Length: 163
Image (cartoon, rainbow, N blue to C red; front, side):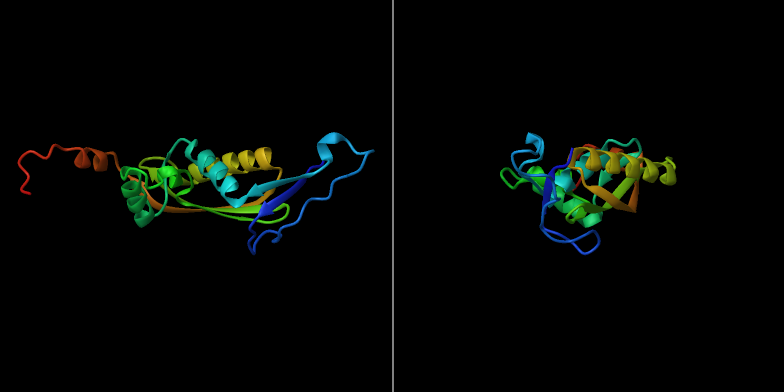
């Protein structure tokens, strides 16, 4: 089955531009090939972000400042906390291909090589299955290691603290 797929946006790595995959058209063509499907860059970013977060050993996505600003934004009512899914995800979508860049924080004790491999497999599988685009690369930058002690220190009661 061939679909006419158009990306919205476009970058320099994959085949850039906004045009459709060529499918058969006209009365003799199957119904599922008539017309064009448009996929926005943000859709690919959400798919990649969700797929990356599914991998065991990933604590969160986003570099330090992006995580800090995102956490503040999520706490403000009406500030649009929906960007959390795409935090730490950058995509370049072309006509038929996509490239994904991820900033990740891994859990302490996991094999970073194994986690990165799992993220690549999951992201490529999800994006290609859901969009029909070929994922040419998934670049992963490990920005931090999450220590379980960090959570305990942040959740200590405020008793005895000077304000």
